[in-house]
Image 1 (cartoon, one colour):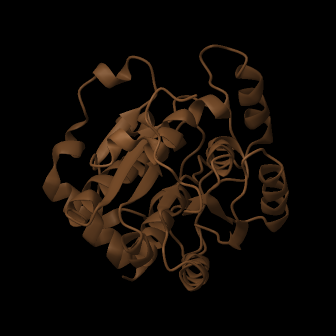
Image 2: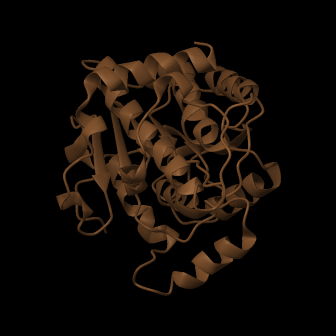
Image 3: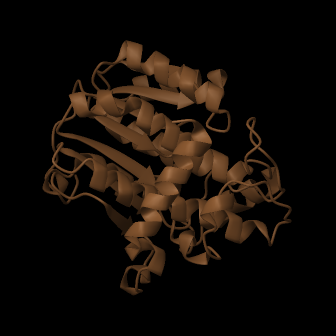
Amino acid sequence: MSSYPERSIAGKQIVITGATNGIGKEIARALARRGADITLLARNETKAAQVIRELSDQDGATGTLAYVRGDLADLTSVRAAAAELSACHPKIDTLINNAGIHAFAADRTADGHELMMGTNHLGPFLLTNLLLAQVQSAAPSRIVVTASEAHRGALGVDVDHLSDPLTHGTVGSVPVYARSKLMNILFTQELAKRLAGTQVTVNAFCPGAVSSGLVRDSRLLTAAARTASASPLIRRPDQGARMGIRLVLDADLADITGRFFTSTPGLRFLPAVRARSNTALQQQVWDRTAQLVGL
């Protein structure tokens, strides 16, 4: 039982990225149990089909469960996935931008962008904009973004070179990841302003330190994180998913938008980073991102 009043999502269409493991899978599990129609956007058809089978076996999973292929690190793939989703679902009650990656080795997306910025920010930005008409058609509706307290480690924002490829190792990957997570929050804030008065809310959250598949390119570190989940310092995916689930279900949040909710103990008492109060920067990041993705 949740500690907040829940709105009904039975029969409502929910699209979620990054739901083949970790936090996204647990969010999808909780929503499937409440009868939602859920579409997973994922790169791996085999994993997606396995998750759909698992979710459909739950009590209460009376909704339609489906899969659309999409790779957020490939803007052509994102456009194709958005076109398929738009054709199938004229109304989307909730869009959950959950997929993300922390790459320890420098790499590029299919379009030549820095991999983490491309996957964590550019891809979700494009997907959301291409599905906005469907989300607005379902109003009152919601957009939920998985961000991170790691955004505090971003070493400035160079808007002109937002997605330029970089050279870094394991240590150097941390501020690069942090910058992509800061973009998630700035995107949430700017989109909330643009959707004011539409009955579409946009909120971001930090799930805390979670054992998940975030570290795509390191099986060793992912396995170590799963082992560490036995520690009180590291959350299990079902624990990290709780705030994301709440942002979808909590009826008391119907009019709350443009906020960043944290699940990391103690950090909510820290002052927000300055970029989060810089409305000019939020608009500049939006405009530059739109250019980069071709909108």
